[in-house]
Image 1 (tube, helix red, strand yellow):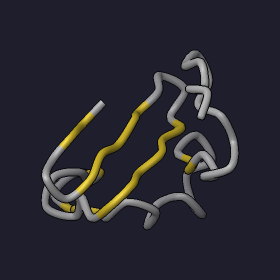
Image 2 (cartoon, rainbow, N blue to C red):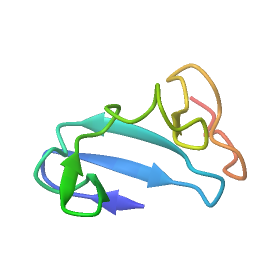
Image 3 (cartoon, one colour):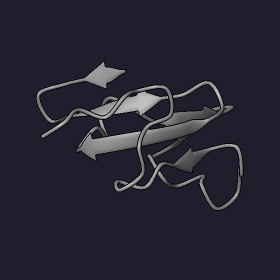
Image 4 (tube, helix red, strand yellow):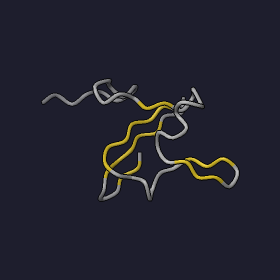
Length: 65
């Protein structure tokens, strides 16, 4: 889990992730010397995929409202 004043992200071992807020200065992927923003590699690397906002994060129990 990554938290900043601008938002948060959860990264899972299977390559899936969820991001809330703007983490562009704090979270990115790199291939050799090229930097890729969140979501930029999703269409090309099937293992990297965003968890939809309405789907529970695997392994984390939802909090009752």
